[in-house]
Length: 310
Image (cartoon, rainbow, N blue to C red; front, side, top):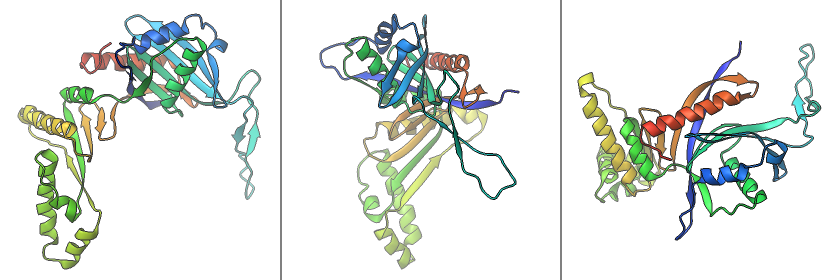
């Protein structure tokens, strides 16, 4: 029986850094670049000593460009583990790949729709996406304006709050100087002032605690996960949504996270939109058909939520 596993599907966006020039969508550049690249060999490029193979490419109307990239090192060996159980120790061995094959170092499934980029990675990081696309663009002499593939924007984060907020976490500096400096108007300043009162009260009657507070770089974590009766759900969601909006729009450089009802995670470092998808395991990877179907569903879900457009 094939084992099913949970794989994370992620969202990124292409951001062009051009001035005075309106670039085409990333999808259009990709579609042009892959015209005529009908064989695996034509879609394979060496990047930093590794082979990046375009194992599959397809275009689906009203969805976008699908791509499967696998990486390997020519002639690389794999480690083997002897299974003898009647000895005190064993040394790992090595083996060659079967004829006509190489050992995979990882693979990644990608869907490009407009400037939206969805991916499912197995043992690879998302930086592979741009490295590979740039190699394709260069080989095809396609001039693409400077761009980067980044997490979702602040505007997208605010739209994500429309799905409802499940949980909010906020980490703030809690040393004496930071708490006493909290005199700026705004949500986080009010939180600091409240924490100042609580922490100062705890340390008030103990000189050791007061001295520790003055010298420490202590952080305080706050988690808001409101629960109430069903008839209060609308008020609860409105409250959490309002708090989330204040946090996102505040320019204080504090650490926070927001988890929406659909599982998207927004942090102070990046806005991470991801979904979990159950797939059949294919040895160390997953089947292409299931990965692509999951990426398409994620696109449709975010379209319906108004989070992304084409």
